[in-house]
Image 1 (cartoon, one colour):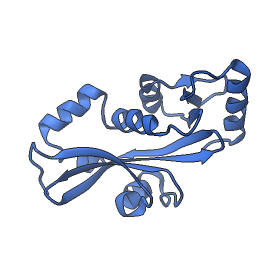
Image 2: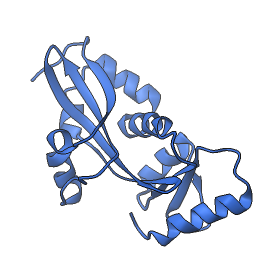
Image 3: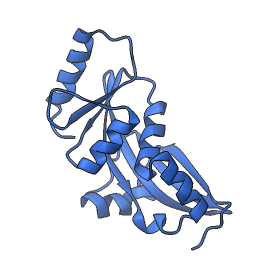
Length: 165
């Protein structure tokens, strides 16, 4: 399947990620895609043809989201027209685009947390605006900039209590 320079990239939230990302998630993590919200997929589409370029999942817990399961379909990336690949590259790549756009849509929380061990993913997360916490691998993106240190510490502790996610 080929796409022209008129193809569109769109990040959308979906209720059921399986039709969009089941194979990609299984390939990336050896597991089934989560069956609970929130799911975001980055789609490449043109004239009725649609392919999933990437996927990311967020689990809602009280006043925070726990992010994970991000994966990029490198096979589809090779089909993205050069002009769009260039735009993606200038924005920081597929993972950066998905993460930076999806966290902007998570407005019903105080913080978004990630548990990251991969150095490349960590660099992307930091570029998006996540911050390292005092716990190894646990990072946070503050949606509510008006939290005091005690409130922030309570959220960080709650996220840490979740373990690896």
